[in-house]
Amino acid sequence: MYIAVLIIIFLLVLIENYNLVSLGKKNYFYFSLGLLFVLHDGLRWNMGTDFQVYLDHFNFPNIKTNKTKNFEILYQKLVEFSRLLSHSYTFFLLLHATIIYSLYITALKKYTKYTILALSFLYVSMVGLLGCNRQLIAVAICFFSIRFIVEKKWWVFLGLMVLAFGFHKTSIVFLVILFLDRKINNKVLMVSLVICILLSISNSVMGIFEIVTQKLLPSLFEQQAKAFLFHNDNFKNSLLGTFFGLMRKGLPICLLIYIKGKGFENRYFNIIFNILVLAFLCYVLFNNNLQFLVGRMIIYFSVFECVVYSWFFMILYNSKEKCTALLLYTVMCIVIFFRSIAIYPELFIPYKSVFSH
Image (tube, rainbow, N blue to C red):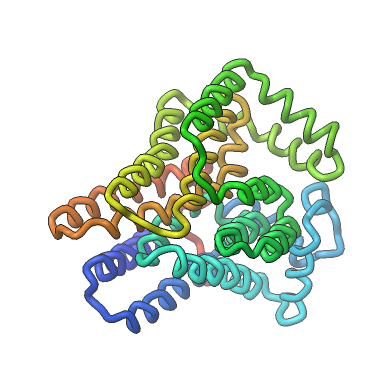
C-alpha cells in the first residue's frame, strides 16, 4: 500500500512541476490525491498508534478509562456526531481524515503553487502520527489558521485556536504564532539559540516542564505530562539521530534564506520562516531532556516544512536543475518516511486495511 501511494504521489509531483496539465486538471488531481489520503487513513485497521484505545472509546463512549477520561470535549462531540450517522469506526476514520485533508488542501492552495509537492512531504513526515486522532485534527486546524494572522483577522485565528484546543490541549503552544508575522532581528534569533543551548545543557528544561504542567497548570496538563514523561525513555535520541534531527530542522531554514536571496516573495514568508526557526529552537531546547516533546509538540511548527520545499521548486526554472532536485527530494522523502515510523515500525508495517481483519 505504502509503495503504491508513494509512486502515485511522485508521479503527480512530476506532472505538477513540469506543468504537464492545465490548472483545471490540477484541481482534479488535488481532489484525487486528497481522496487517496482519506482512503489510506480511513480504511486502516488495527494499525497506527493507540488504535485499540480509540476504537474502544468509539464503541463505548460512555465508559471512561484512565486513557480516555481526559479526551477533549470536541473530539468526544465528533465521535457522538459520527455515531449518529453510523456505528462503524471505519466511517468515523473516513470522516476524520476528510476533515484533516480538507483543511490541509484548502490551506496549501493559499500558501503555495505546488500543492501536490507540499502534500507529498506532508504525507511522509506525518505518517508516524497515524492513529493520534485528536492531535492530528488539532495540527491541521493550526496549519489552516495562519492565513488569518497574515490577513489580520485576529479573532478568526483565536477562534480556530479554541477549536484546536478542544481537540488536543497541546495546541495551546501554537498561540505564540500570533506574534510571529514580522521580521525578527538576527541578533534576537542568535541570543535565543544560545539560551536554548544553555538551558538544554544545564538540564533545567525538565524542572521547568514539571513546574508548569504539574504545579502551575495541573488541571490542564498533568495527565498528558505524566504520559509524556512515561514514554520519554523510549524516545531517547542517539548522537546520529540528533544530528539528523538538527539537519532536518535546519535545512528548511537554509532553503528559505536561499530563496529569499533569489528574490522570492510570498505574503506567508515571514510567518513561516519564524515558525520554522521556533521549531529549530524547540528541538535544541528539548532534544537533550524531553525527546518525546520533540515529536508531539514541535509537530505544530515543523508541519510547515512542506510549504518550504514547494517554494524551493518554484524558483527552479532550469529543467536539469529541477530533475536533480526532484531526485534528491525523492530520496529525502523515503528516508523521512522510515524515520517517521522508526520508533514503532511494527504498528505501521505492513499496512493493514479494514478488508483484511
